[in-house]
Length: 177
Image (cartoon, rainbow, N blue to C red; front, side, top):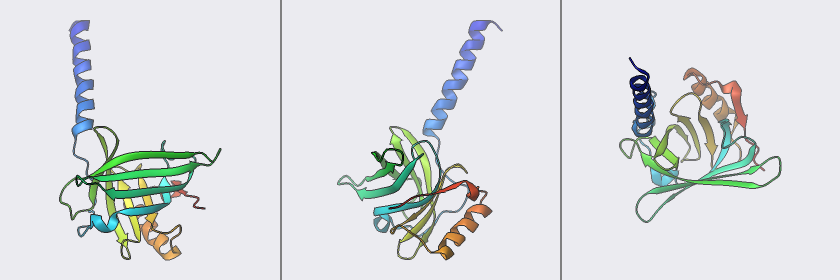
């Protein structure tokens, strides 16, 4: 096979992989909650813990605010404060359902057509607490309507996450002032 043909095939394979990752379905292999109510989920959430990733590295006071837009879409604004210099950081995204609207299987985009899985695994109280898994074992959040959770709830969520294969030792416990 000549070099041009090899280069063409390699380029086509790379382009196919990129296209697949943009348009692939975003889902979890674990069961999400089935009686999800997006209206109750709307509003302000404090991040209690996370598996750290590039956007949130070095942030405190991390929050997510979900709101229903006039066109029926859902907007999310993630915000936090950089620990090193106390400057704010904010990002706006959109949320869509992966399947039916009563299922906690969502996808979130902060970058155009690129979506990531956002799977609501547990809801506590009257939508006061949530355990959320990403599309793989690199993403996990514990959220609350208040800046703290009880030790019992923390243990319950950590136990579930461990049984699902998450490295809970790597969790960052968010500073909420």
